[in-house]
Image (tube, rainbow, N blue to C red; front, side, top):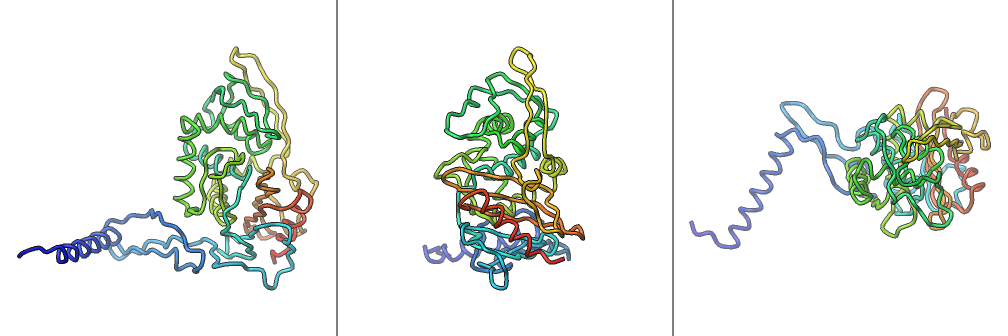
Length: 330
């Protein structure tokens, strides 16, 4: 049979469809990568595979999904924040949503993903070494003052990264895990994408301002939802103060003591009586404003993730976050 261009195109399309059907139905693949559609409900995540009578879970199974803003019937005053969300992890329900799909600068909330990648691909007992890239000159950047050749364990570094929000430590962690900032950024994006956080793009491990570095409230929920599966991550978030000894290039001891930047853990901000703040991450830059992510539990032990992005100042941010937590009914 003569194969005209038109016939060949039709055969090619049919073959492609057939191969895709075989792949999804017969190969048992369990990981899918695609962009979510913020204008639809859970069905935008639904990919099912039937293999030998078994149905794989849809992508959104157990996740909170919203098609847009959810503010009606709430008493939340979020007039000063650009975006915010409250997610019931156990019920798979979005309790509150404002601009949760808007791409924004996350500042140091980035470090939640940095820690997730480190826990996923590193070993806590690894001894990691600072390069000359730990010298950060950006005004106002939080650092512990690392010098090239300084060494510490990955576990120590994660405490300093999440509690102190030390940007120089973030560089050291990234270079150890990913080989370079660029390599680690690729890893960050791959991990985020695998979780469905496809409206994000990360170019560094610390969140210092870059126009190509952004995420959303919803993507931060997805990332934190995965990070809290690691006991060490949750343990660190719940600590108010941490002291450790690391070493310089000559083996001399260097002492560092840090306190959490989370006002709820420090006892400077107060959650509603029915809510316990397990921990969280703060972030502040001139581009990102004041940002906060929390992991909390109610009196029944049910878990919640809440996020406020781009609030006007620290005091307002904590007021807004407490307003969110008050929407949890137990």
